[in-house]
Amino acid sequence: MGTRNLRRFFTNALLLFLFSTVKSQTIERSVLGSFGGSYIVGSYQLHSNVGEPIIDYSVTDSAVIIQGFIQPNNSGPMAIWEDDFVKNEFSIYPNPTNSEFTIRFDEFNLGPYKIQITNSLGALLYTSKDSFKLFHHISAKHWGSGIYFVKVFFYNSANSACYKLIKN
Image: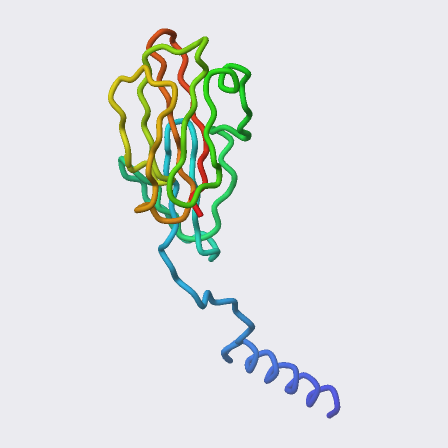
């Protein structure tokens, strides 16, 4: 009789296990956001995100929108360094600036040049006409605080240069 009860117990336990709903711990995402992006400014890339796990991404002509963590992109520059050419051709001061700054060109290498200034998203804020001036004064009082890129194109050579300007 003991073996029969034991067999009935295990049979009932097996049926109970097979037909019952088993629940376990699950991990659900609690935040679903779509803010994030990658913007290309010349040869620089700007990445921003809010830090949720990646869910999906979409690509347009002007931006890559990613939901979540942005992994390093090895296709762009990994460092910015100053070339001797840039140091000898012009300087920007004060940097950081509050309202206006000056670009001073080297008088021995002065030739025609053009200046373009963009914000970190690539929007063009300032363009100069072709110039030969030794000093170029630019007002930044209406710009918001942030990082700006000052690009100088020299017409007497194939060189161009880009400086980072910080506005307080």
